[in-house]
Length: 369
Image 1 (tube, rainbow, N blue to C red):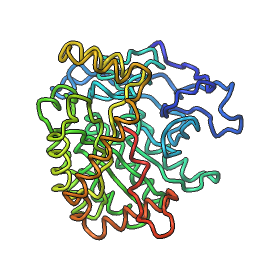
Image 2: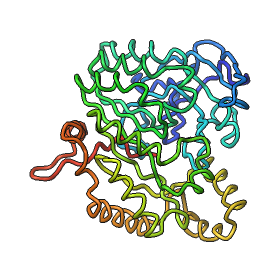
Image 3: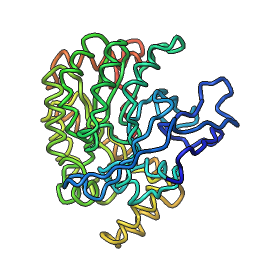
Image 4: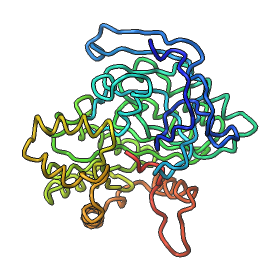
């Protein structure tokens, strides 16, 4: 491939975790340094099975896997692990699409069908957590692309990663749209016995036709909420990232009420609403879909997002307040097991979020996508 042996200039501030070795902790402030992305050329594979038809996998050996997020990024966590790049979930709005352009791949179809697999991720995690300079900071996973996308069913990288985190007693969180996380339930429970573990599933809406249109490679919202229920039943605290809420498509009072009610029924420890944001890469791909499927909404979206990636603050606050009121009404968090609630609160305390006499909020490191 053209990007075999590519050099990354770490002076580029993407505002996102690239999931690559950027040298940001090398003492030079992440400026003016280049480093090879991969330790050896990629191995290209295709699999003639229905679930992977049309998908190409590039197996690479990464140089680093525990990555520091650039300080300019608008995210509430500092360290991530991302074993994959690109995602077969194929969500039309995925903010991570632009990261494929760093490899001379496009942010549209290539992002959905050309998946980079860091096959040495488990060994790298174990090695880097054992390094003297590592201080056991919380690690967020699923913050760039889903670590439990379909490729994980074949490559099985997460068991080794979870085992390394468990053995190091290193706190971590996982955000996913996938159901494969239940395969690793025993490992998650073992880790939760020795450190702080929190999880969240992403469910922005429960409208099935809309789900099939904008999240075609994901399990259904119903299945994701079943995952949430199962994790909480086994003492693994799991909340819901209600994201993205799509203006004029999933933001009606009825749609919001239905989604929050089903989140409450699943026993979620918390719900965090996030309105769609359209960064470059995702913006072009989503707007092309909107033009085909809902052309009458294009002027409304241009009005909302004409000045940047985010909807106006007043709109975001109105949606957030509506969801908070619905969460109180339907009792989100009340049905969660006592052990799960306690573990979720411990994870929140680690983020330094508690004030005297105030309730502990849910773990903030899960609030990106």
